[in-house]
Amino acid sequence: MVIPSYMNYISKYIQHNIIEFMNQMINKIYPLGKKASRKANNVYLNPVISNINNNFKPLYYANFLKSLDGRIATYDKKNDRLLTPSSIKNKIDFILFCQLHAQADCLVTNTHYINGLNKGYYGDILSLNDSYLDQWRDKNKIKQQKIIILSNSLSFPIDKKIEKYKERITILTTSNNKKKLSTLKNNGYTVISYAGKNISENQLNNYVIKNKFKSVYFIAGPTIVEQMISKNLLDRLYLSTSISMVGTENYDSIIRGNFLKKSIKLELIEMYMYTKIENKEKEQTLFQVFNLKGK
Image (tube, rainbow, N blue to C red; front, top):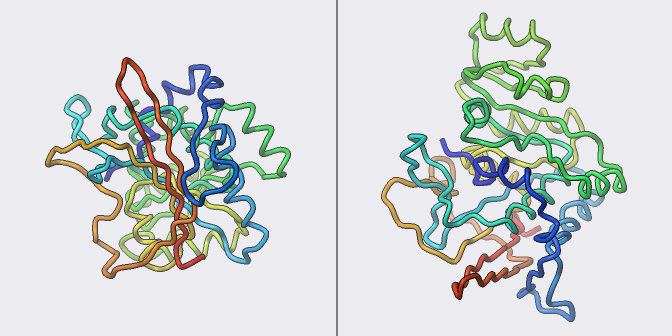
């Protein structure tokens, strides 16, 4: 299981002042209009929130960073796992990730992320230390985010890195391990058990509807996102593409084909290009926004 790109480099960026990057200009290349350039600090702040009031169902969305040859992660020898290659990362992509994060009233993650957070090869993206986005959330009256952890195994540690989020966390599980269930509940975590081998997209959807979440952002790996797509539940996909090729045989991609068994159509609704020139080398990233189900 691989986790989205932002998790294994967010902590480094969050410790630095990124205001200069927020003021960087991004060129809008589709659809064409009078305003072709926009500042990075607000490119993604309107599309999701503007649709919430028009939807009677939860708005589900996900975001991935990939190379032109489709890699979202490659083998990292130091950590002995698949992680985002450093060659495709950039701070503008991180800023746009933060904007999508800020619009959610519920985040969905999984066991693999919690373990990676504990071991240190993933950064903490369960909250954002960003006063600009905090003020934006307050202005738009977005309530404090809830966090759903999907965990069939419950094999993750209870430590200070997630303890501070305890009141916001609900764990959905199919585990019947009484010791693990008891430990979590005795430590104050909300745990909801389901029958079956894995938490399904329908079980997640029913829980979200029951709790009246409006906007749900997936910060887990591609498995649950593919499940949501296969069942026509994902509404919007944000795709950042580094104009580079990574290669390597051991890699992961957005769609593995474990759940999506048919071809589907996506609607491209926005596209942006960011270009950075440093030491006479040009670095480009394409940002695409897709509606699913023709929305």
